[in-house]
Image 1 (cartoon, rainbow, N blue to C red):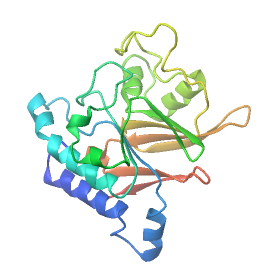
Image 2 (cartoon, one colour):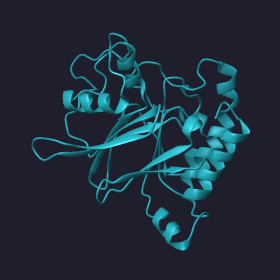
Image 3 (cartoon, rainbow, N blue to C red):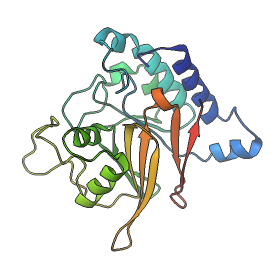
Length: 240
């Protein structure tokens, strides 16, 4: 949002029209009407693509646009909005939800939810777990692992969302419990702000099935990942 480029704003408006059912055939609109939850995985004020050139005033100036977009989206679907590392939230993981004062319009909708990062929720009996991408980027920075999908497979096997915390990723001190431990196998395991879209269906030794999804930076790829809860199939909508 902070970039406010014409191309970026056009893609956001096209996304709103798409999820509102204003695009496509009647059959396609019927499929869109079955969307039960939209999760925005961080980077709504500022993302990893523009963090090198972005300053604080750009983020502040984008607040009205972010609020208007969130309100328009919440009017047609339940929305869970996660913060990212460059968003106006605490820098330490787990990040707390955005302050409600940032969203005077969106908070009027009961369908608008300000959530934490990482985030875990139950969608129709399916456990969904993910982050806005900081743990993956840190693992790639300090290891030889370079495939984001493979890193997600490994963190799922290790049962830990952020294995480099607190050594190289700042996090809130926790004494009794580790907030990044994966206690229950998720049906959907996602990471935002990835380089490319990638997905895989991971099967466990005890019959667990997890749909792993690497969600690319929307500013860069204009791509949205869609997961079918009936069979955990995953495909993308690209509005380039």
